Length: 289
Ligand code: ADP
Image 1: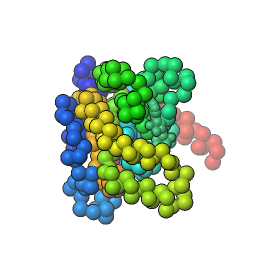
Image 2: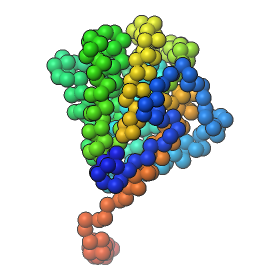
Image 3: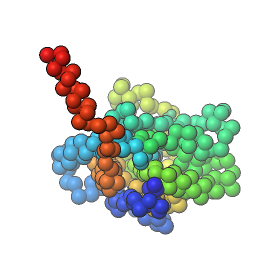
Image 4: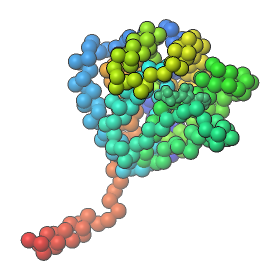
């Protein structure tokens, strides 16, 4: 089985909307973070989102039951970009039994003692499961590059390594879908202010956010390279306009539903004789009446 469809005849058709076609040189500045696509306002999105949420839950149950495919969803964004909000609004419709959200923090001593993909590979989804990377192995060509944590000769080799690794996952039945939540610099500041104004968000406030914000252009450049070099046929990047949170949720939900629906997943045939089990049930029901 292959998410590339190479050796199984099963193929995944990733939606074109917001997908970065392989070989495209992405310029984030030219992508409107305010865009709400074909959707006029929040009210028009909400009805569709409710239906998509229901559908996503069904498709995830099918994936879990069929136990053939898995989904690795990567979320990356500038600080305040809405990774946590995406998890709570889009992913929360799924049954927690089949989903794991995995954070990627500054690597531990043990992680540093291994190659940078080790910690990511350990937590990739088993068949039937969904894993959401909230930050990911891409930090190793983002923060690591911007802060010069390893020499250029080292990080510049990583794009090909990441592509090879993701291709390996795809060829073994994992859908690898990567979402960059695209906000602009003004929106980031507005969200930092929201955090200051809302005491329930104070735990998210960090002085480090402002130091990273000062490196906005370097981060955007690093994102542009990562997305341009690593959006492949088998593991696409989607750049989602994310200034409007409701549109971000709608766009991601649409892409997930369209992709998962294209797999034509089926509930497996029962492993027992259902007629026989029905007879047992009827006998038990008779006895207890
Ligand atoms: P988040 O911002 O995702 O909610 P944190 O505030 O705990 O979570 O930030 C995690 C930090 O870990 C980020 O600053 C991120 O850049 C950093 N980080 C993640 N992976 C790496 C890495 N490989 N090397 C260095 N820093 C990393």
